[in-house]
Every structure is written in structure tokens, then in C-alpha cells.
Image (cartoon, rainbow, N blue to C red; front, side, top):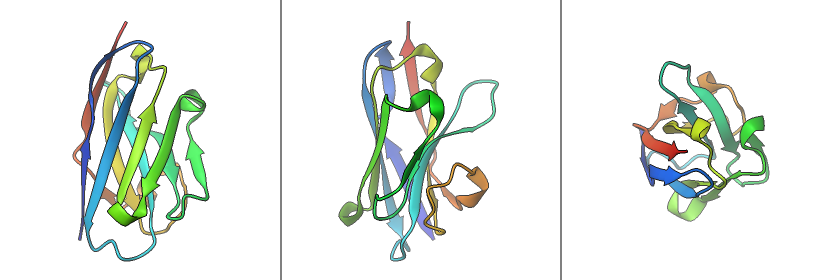
Length: 124
């Protein structure tokens, strides 16, 4: 089994920055992709960003391109999401996810493991 624990959420003003972290533990010996999704109140969960194990391929949702950066430290089994120029519409619960398929996919069903989520609130 794999466990994912997110941290780094909080309240920030529009235009500010936050960095989310997600630490993976358990059976993570294989090569795997990691990603971030978010869910705003009353909306469906949506893709934010993903990255392959080596970091050679990353994928972003259009509205966050140029503002968010996904990165990872494989030695620490940790993935990060640096969020800059935050907007009120970025307010959501952010979830970390892990895919054993090692593809930088945007498809949530390809990720078999999920964290508990961390709240990000951007005030205007």
C-alpha cells in the first residue's frame, strides 16, 4: 500500500504564492507518476498538474500554465506544487495522487492512490 500526505495549504491573498508538498510512503519502490488535482465547492475534481518519475515529462491544466510548477524529489518520495500569482478561482481542496503507470496523465482514474487533501483559499 501507498500513503500520501499533503501539506502547505492555507489562506493567501490574490497574487500571492503557496507551495504544496506531498510525501509518499509505503510500497513506492517502482517508478510512478505523481500529480495534483483540485476540487472547489460544488464542482467536480479537476486536473492541475502531473509529472513522470524522472521528471522528464510534465503536464499542466491550461489555466495554471505559467503560474504553477510541479516538481519532485525522488530521494524523498516527495512531489511539490509551487503556486504563484494565485487567483480567487484557485480556491479549492488540493489532492496529491500517485499513478503506477508512470504517465504524466490528466485522467484521475489512472491514479490509484490519493492523499486526504489540503485546503487552499485565495482571497480577493
